[in-house]
Image (cartoon, rainbow, N blue to C red; front, side):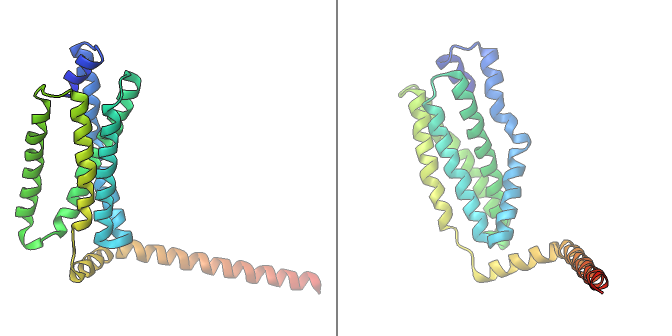
Length: 209
């Protein structure tokens, strides 16, 4: 759709429009990983609720970027907005799968399957907006509004206290060596600082004498 959109609305050749639209897919190289990585970082800071909040951020800015893209009528403005939209879209995918494993560990495969199928179903439903019944820019605007509204559903994801405790314990176990190394480094720096203070005090006393 992006290639046809750029060809029809920006008067690009199909080859040029294809290269421009490819920028959307190229963001997959790193954006999904970034989404999952930031999801882990939010989880480390605020637990499972932090992961859900990061998912909300990604979806909200994805919707906002799509709405902005739909209103761009100049190529040099449309392309950056498309890239920003793609960035948050792919990060939202990574953020989604940073939450999925914690929804129901006993039915992890089923939950992942529902999430994957939901994405395909959404794509099919979105396709009906591009049946030439309305302008494509209006279709993108509607999709942006839908995504922005749907982002607030992330706040309805609930985790039990037990799940939160298990996640914190698992994170601590996975990072225990890193924490121990940081503690040893901090202790060494503390001892070095105390020695420096002691030496400085001795030198001061000697000079005073």
